[in-house]
Image (cartoon, rainbow, N blue to C red; front, side, top):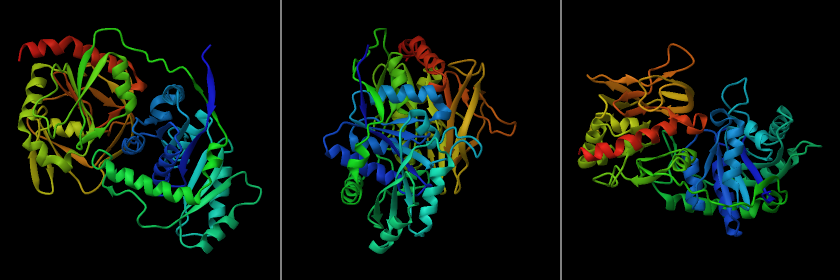
Length: 462
């Protein structure tokens, strides 16, 4: 019987987006790391940027935990596997504590995740424009769902010592929520943002680490960190055995650079568990794909910010187009979809891309799409011909089609007015939707199987 032990684990949740939970999370990761602890970080929901920030601080992967995309059992399995061998676990929430799929369901919310894993919550609330009213906020969050263990509160952006005293006095009498401290307003604290969210760690990891260190310095002075570490709440396995794939390896080239960095770590782990050797490459810098690639995976990111550099790397664009035309399996999501088109149009400039598909993508001043998606696979999908898989969509661009035929590998469920998705051409599949492979493991299996079948044949014919 495997040995287990208990470790501290908690969720850093927000009263709303903009409460400061990302900065608090980064500061806590840095502060706990300073104590010599092996910390494992997680992110509630479908976001890809925050896990990258966690990784920049800790030097190890951070995992998404989304009860809607992965299901409760999938979340528990991923958490248990990732936290094995750790000394503590810190989970960053998404939006406000109770925000999830919609206004009726708790699915996808930080609250649902807290109940699923049985971990307590540290609620971060922005007190910049309130004083005694924050006591009502705490009382409301505590009472809204008694099944959620809101154990601690942290007030952010306080204006003065007197403001902090009023906030402390506002805590509701008889509440089980303990105030851990107050963080004074400081314009130097924070992480820069842009249209899709925070600056990514791949763009400036040094900046992220500096921000985390500054936040940690503040937390060390204003927050009772011993309280967070004083109540171990989850069991973890002491079995750190590494399960090695014994079959024939298949080599998958994965785009990884400043333009492409949005991946669910679980997706990459699943591919490796199926026998994939992941070969990072840079569409910005590398003139050719990694040697012996049997397939290509291009995730999301900010290709629009690097469009001129991507255009300048014509040898790689030509290589991707040539191999895709010959039948090399290619899977692309969001930013990857943009790269596989003919061009990216932004602020009056048109930059040529790989040209695997007959569209250009045009950047818009406002968000085009946001939300969870369920897709039903069709026989035109080059990988898996039937079944459903879940994912998330978030982008500021739209497709502008030129002449040329494409197949439809998905049907987006939930209404006839949905925009078409899951475009296929040969063995290439591109979509705005970031699919989570844990919601249907047959999908990545089919991708790996096709790469194993076609990779060598394509390379032999080039």
